[in-house]
Image 1 (tube, helix red, strand yellow):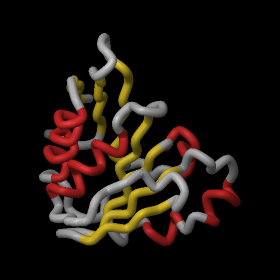
Image 2: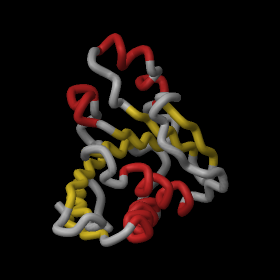
Image 3: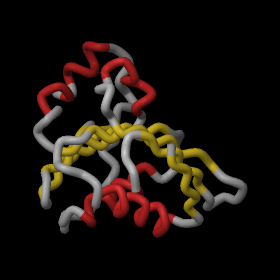
Image 4: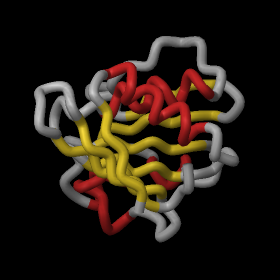
Length: 140
């Protein structure tokens, strides 16, 4: 496990950029962490490093946002997913192996995550802007 500390949204985006450089195009990145922890900022940095020119925003109401760059990126929000039926209705399983999946609120679909998923837990640090990243499944 790798542990990194971010002191700002910019540094959080830089962590996403570092991880993007290690990706091959079909990874599942499971993000764990509460509201306001920087999950979308992380995804913004990752997507930018992979050539996404569109603005990255939280998929809260869309459930999934799609971005095209070096690879297809599918940015999921699983906050409102409470059952297998809910998960199937997102089309989640159709996206696996067709691009990079970045999943916010992975806590809600823990049992459906592939064994080889990159797992990133983000927690609040000592100050309001500090975030602690615990990263498993990728070397950076």
